[in-house]
Image (cartoon, rainbow, N blue to C red; front, side, top):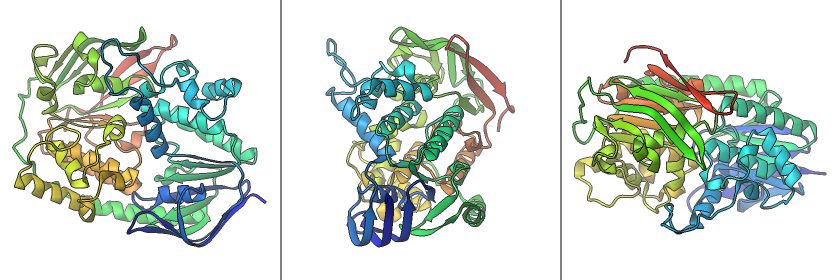
Length: 491
C-alpha cells in the first residue's frame, strides 16, 4: 500500500544541525499541510518526504512509486542553469541567446505537448510557451515549474511554498487544481509559512519548530493554538528599534520628485510590457504596486534601479536627473535600497552572512571595498535583530531560503536609503518575520529620510505607511492600463 511511515527519524541538515521526525504516517489519498517559521526545517521535512534527505538514524519507509517535489531551490537551480548557457547574464554583440523555452522546461522530463498545452492553459501561461524560461517573471516561473511537476502525474506531490509569488487569481486557480488532484486520489503534502495559506480542503496540519516536527493533528485544533501563539509573539515587535545609519542619509528637497516617468514604454519581442505609463512619485509618498503575474511590475522597478537597458530610451527622471544625462548607475543606486526575487536568485557569490549585509553599503553583490569599524558594528546590531549573530561567518547559502530573504531585506534597509524598493520582499517568510519586516519598514519611513515602492500580491502584506497605489489593470485586448489611487497625503 502507498504510504509513508516514519518513526524517530533523524535527518542531516548540516555538520552541526539535524531534523527530527518523532512519528509520522502519510496514507494514500491524504492531504496534509506543514507550517513552520524560517529556519525551522521546513525544506528538510519536504526533502525527507521526497527521499532526498540523508537519514542518520531511525526508520523511514516511503512506498510511493512516483514522487514529485517542487521548491524555491529547484526554481533557483533551473534559472541558474538557463543563465549559465550564456557565459554572462549580458549578451555580447553577435552572441546568440540560448536557453530553453517555457514549453521545453515544462516537457524536459515528460514529452507530452497536449498535456503541456492543457496545464499551461489552466495556469494562464499558454502565451508564454515559446518565450525563453529565464526571461519570465517570478510568478510566471512559479507557474511553469508547477506545470513541469504536474507533467509527471505523481502519486505523491510535495509542494514547498507553492503559493508564494502567485497573484490572487493564480492562488485561487492553484487551490482549485490541488483540490481536484486530491479528489483524483493523489496524495498531497504542502509545506507553508503562512497558516492562512492552508487550503480549505486540507484537514490535517503539522507544526514545525526548532528543527523538529512537533505536532500533527486536526486543522481546527492546531490553528487555534498556533495562531494565538503567533499573535502573542507579534505584540512583542512594538519594542523593536532600528540601528542607526552609518552616515547621515541623503536629504533631497521636498519639492524634488523622486521619480518622473512620461509615456513609459518597454517591449519584449515587439510586444509592449509597459505601454504609455505616466507616473510621478513625489516626496513623502509611499507606493504599493499591484497587478497580476507578468503585468510588468518588476520591469517598472528595474527601470528605476537602472538595471533595465530600455531605461535610456524612456523619458525618465530619477532624483532630479534625467536618465542618459551623464549619470552613472552608481549615481542612481546610492539613493536606493533594493530587494527582489531576481536579486535573490542572482546572489550566488560564496560569501559570509555578515558580508552579504555589509554589501548593502556599496550596492554590490559581494564586498569589494574595505569596511569601516562602524559599518561592521552596525551589521552586528542588525544580525542580532535577525537572531543570526551565531551564523555571521557562515556561508550565505547555508541559510534557509526564508533566512536568506530576510537577510537581503535587511541589506536593503541598512543604509537608510532615500528610496526603498521592495519587489515581493515577503516571499518565503513566516508570519512573525513578515510582521517584523513591516514594522521595520514603518520605523524607517517614520524617520523621514526614506520612501517606499512596495510590490506584493498579498494586500495584508502592505506596511501601514502606504499612501498611494499604482494598479496594473488587465484590459480586454490583453494589455494593461494603469489606475492610481491616493490613500493619504503622506506619513
